[in-house]
Image (cartoon, rainbow, N blue to C red):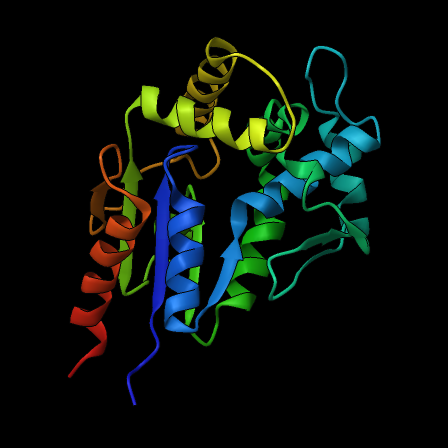
Length: 226
C-alpha cells in the first residue's frame, strides 16, 4: 500500500491553486481542504455582522470576542457551511474578495483557523491550498508546491469565473483587486504569503489544467513509491 502524504499548495490568487488541489485530491482519493474558503467564510461573517465599516476597517476587538460563535464545516462534495448556512457561492463574490485579505491578517483569526486546519490534516492523505500552508500550517508537508502565473492570465481566469456566475465586471477592476490582494497577503504581519524554501515552483501561465495535474502527479509519484 502506498503511503499517504500531506500536500501543501501555496501561491497568489487566481493562479489555479484550488483547481489543482481539488483535482489532485480527487485523483489520489485524498481529502481536499480549501483554506481560502475558510478565511472567506470569516470575512463573510464579518460583513454580515457589521464588523467591517464603510472604509473597510475591521472591528478587531469585536471580532475576537465573536470568534467562538463561528462554526465552519466543509463537506466531501466541497460545500462550505457557516453556522449551518450554505455559503459556498456567497463567499466567491467581489464583496467578500475585497475584504478577505484584511480579515486573514488578523492574528486571532489565523490562530483559530490554523488550529482547525492542523486538526483536519493530522493523519495525512490531504491536499490543502492557501498562502501559508507550506510555511505555517504544514511546514513538514512531504510535498510543497508554490503556484504562480502572469497577472494577465490570472485576471482573465478570475473574470471568467465571475462571469460564469452571472457577475459582470471589467478586467481592470479584477486585476486591481488581485494585485491589491497580492500586496496585502505578502506584506501582512501574520503569516504572510511566502514561498517555502523547499517548495517546487509551478508556473501555470501556459499550462492547461490537465498539464498542471500531470506535473503534480509526477512529483507525488516520486514520494509515495518505494
